Amino acid sequence: FWLCIYLNVRVCDRVCTNQIAGQLCVWERKEVMAETGQRIFLRKETAFFADSVECCLDSSLVVYGHVLCGTYQLDESKQERVGGLHLFTVEGKDSREKLTEDAAPCQFGRDEYLHLGAGVLDARWFPSPAGEGKGMCALACADCHLKLVEVDGPGHMETQGDGKTGLHLRESLACHPHLESPPSNVIGLAVEVSEPSSRVVMTCSDGIVAGFDLNRAAEGGKGKGTTNMTFEFKAHDAETWALALDPEDPHFVATGADDCRLRLWDLREAPKPRDGSAGGEGGDPEQTLSWTAQNGKAHSAGVTALLVPPAGSSFGPSKLLSGSYDETVLLWDRRMMTRPLWEHRAVGGVWRIRLRPKK
Image (cartoon, rainbow, N blue to C red; front, side, top):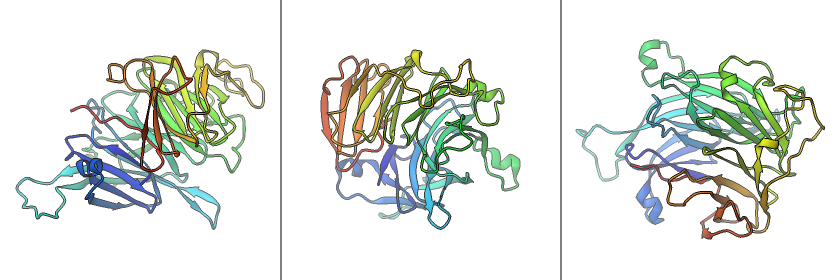
């Protein structure tokens, strides 16, 4: 499997993974950690190849415990990158139900799908700017657009009763607003949402990093997203696979790319969008920003995963985790990027890094 993410501990302490063969699986977490005797409790066929999974761990939202699964597939006959978004829950079975030794103690609950046309490479949950405990998700899509999808609570089926999905596409914002359409070989790769600043950042395969203001999106910005974009710059000359934000520092961004480089940025000097929106005055065809620190030697292959541990974690302040398909995870002190603090050898390439949710 490409990645794994821990489901909330109330959901039978399971691990959810996605596989390139168009299946999403639920595993026993303890068996996965032991790397022996692993068995799959549940399998779910997906509309296209499954390549991203994200669980909502915000208990203040009505979609707490819901899982997103983004799909992406190249239609070779039409040369189109198609896909969509699955939404489901994993629920424990009724305790009165007699289970056999091989039976799964959990089952899929809510199960809905939204076809988006463009494939979904990455997804993140965040609270809806409209409030009321609603959940939204930010999607990095293969058409180089940031798509914002609102998700209804679990009771929507009872109120609608007409088979409609509880997934609603609210915005589709271009990461290349100065172009009528991005080059056909450029796709969105990674997305991160910073709370509570309501800021979302997305990377593309041509090395572009673009930032958007979610509060402006909530006010109804439409079209190509120029009213929502706050900055745009060229971070790498290669596919920019990884991205990390720091909720404690609204000016910090870390990026990782196929050039093996990990770079840190200060957004206070980030160029405005090239079409002059959001107070910008236009710019060069390829705007750049000087990084504050970088390391291009520690990883021997592309940097594909990044994570800033939350404040108060056991990692301590100013830390950063990076993963690569060189099969290593590195811990960094962002104040001294010359060498990592420690290294962990993984079994296979590292495409996502997640911390286990607190009980």
